Image 1 (cartoon, rainbow, N blue to C red):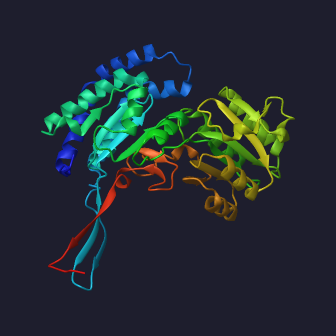
Image 2 (cartoon, rainbow, N blue to C red; image 1 turned 90 degrees about the horizontal axis):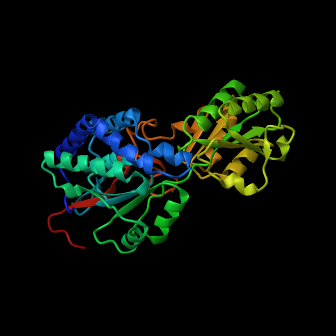
Amino acid sequence: MGRVLDISKRNLVLQHMAALIDQNREVIIKANQKDIKEYKGADKAMFDRLKVDEAKIDGMILSLKQLVKQDDPIGVERFQFTHENGMKIFNKTAPFGTILIIYESRPDVTIEAAGIAFKSGNTILLKGGKESIHSNLELVKLWHISLLEANVETNWVQYLDYDRKKTQAFLEKPTQNLDLIVPRGGEKLIEFVKTHATCPVIVSGRGNNFVYVHKDSDKALAIDTIINGKTDKISACNAVDKVLIDKDMSNKEDFIQNLIVKLKHYNVEILGDTSLSRFEEIEPITNDSVWYEEFLDYKIVLGEVENTISAISKINQYSGGHSAAIITNDQKESETFMSSVDCAAVYHNASTRFTDGFQLGLGGELAISTDKLHQRGPIGLQHLVTNKWYIHGDGQIR
């Protein structure tokens, strides 16, 4: 866009957008019903992401209202220095420019992720999946009305209604300036974007999150956090897929049997390694590649490990680098685990479901990155910026 939109204008657009979404609840849900009716897939996680109900609309409105209250992330001074020759040097935050968000089946991304990117001073290109086209186009209409009400050009938020072939061509040779791409979806989408993109990509990675239950743990707490992590929202990237149990746990048989009962209550399919073959409710693992899988389904793998070091090693080998938890009463063991596990978020005695921009105090998120550059974990408003050097002189030469 070439210029930074004033913060008062950005906030005004977001305020208008929150009001319009509230006023157009029925229209949005009606458009979403078309998407649901046309969706023929059997993917439970995708269907869960696709559906828009009153609660999801409440979430969209809340995310916009919270964004309005947050400080402007642009122009924040990160560093200052006075050179020996008298130059005044500053480093300040700046927008990326134009951000393309490519996503599957989640109409709320059209509001929440786009809202964060817009408040960060960026021009937004949205490329949603075909399964949510009716919902997305309705929401983009509201973006354009909001922009016009604030006397802002509608091209600050654009929707690319492209098929796969046109998307690939755009990634390889963009027809307009493009500074950053954020893919939000499964591994196939992420790999597609990484393969064809010619500008930086922030990978909003897969989950495949682990919970390690240490021998010195509160067993009821362990079961509660595992059940919450597995069943609260199967479509979430912060859901639990793997549980590692310390082989030296006291009353281990009772713990595992209780866990099985609770998982079966939610119709969770349970797989297990050879150490758990004595439990008839647990289906034996036939291929170790299952340890790499993110399920996004009512499915879980249980296994036994020797100790904390073994758990750390297994998690670092197989996990997606997203979230991992240790359940223990031993503070030293928790510190060893949390410092050594190579994940964006590590937990002690809590559910992995909190790896979320809202829950971790960011007021929302653009994505949850499993990359280590430039930001790891939930990417909030304050992270969706680059930086710029400002040097003030009075004729200095070198």
